[in-house]
Every structure is written in C-alpha cells, then in structure tokens.
Image (tube, rainbow, N blue to C red; front, side, top):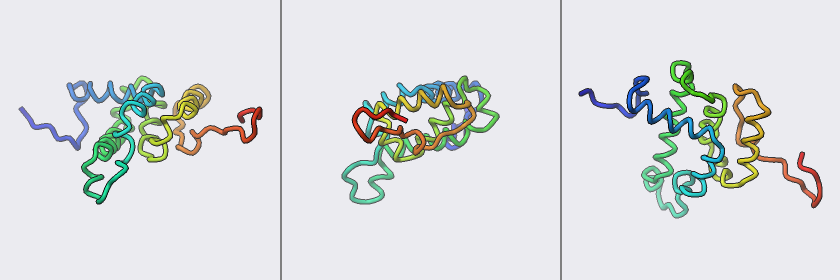
Length: 146
C-alpha cells in the first residue's frame, strides 16, 4: 500500500478525499462555524498563556490553522472546486478562517448573521474579507443598522 503524504491533496474519490470534502462542505454553513467557535475555541484561538513560539506551534490552534491552510490551498483549484456543492460559501469561509480576527469574532451571533446575509446577497464567486463581514452596529439606541 502506498504511503499517504499529508501535504499533498488526496486523489479524488479516495477515502481521505471524501472525509475532507465532507468537512469543507460543513464549513460553508455559518451555524457550523459558530458551533466550532463555541465548542472548540482552542482550535480557533491562540493559547492565552504561551511562553515561547514553540508552545504555539505545537498548540491545537496552530495545527488546525495549518490544516485549514492546506485545505484552502487545494480546494480552491478547479480540479477540486468542481466537487463543492456551495463553492462560494465554502471557499469564502475557508479564506476567512485564515484570519485570526475572524476566528476570534465568529463566536458573535451578529458575525454569523452577516455571513448568512452575504451568502444570500452576494454572488457566490465573491470572497469576503473579515472586515466586511463585521456588521455595522448602530451607534445610538434606536438607530437602524445600516
């Protein structure tokens, strides 16, 4: 049996391909992102008490960030993107998950609501940045959100 190289994309329709496809398809769902933020914050945020850089590199958050980078690197290619049922949302969320600020902010319900809003209002091919996902909150009581 050939050895599996974790740094190269899997062969389409292999077992590993199927598992990774299922996972990235889940990332298209803002509710799933919020579930990750609430139940697995250690995967999305740097450890609070890190005394040296090797502590961070060995952390769950660093390993998960590397995994997300790896997934984004190959799922955005046409060879693999054709298998995504919601390519716009999936790739947008994979890209957003590369940003530390977004990972910290996605626990907020207004950020998740904005993801749903952009999914409905924006063309699927447009990628959002974390700053544009942040909602415009009213500055005064009773003021409409813009």
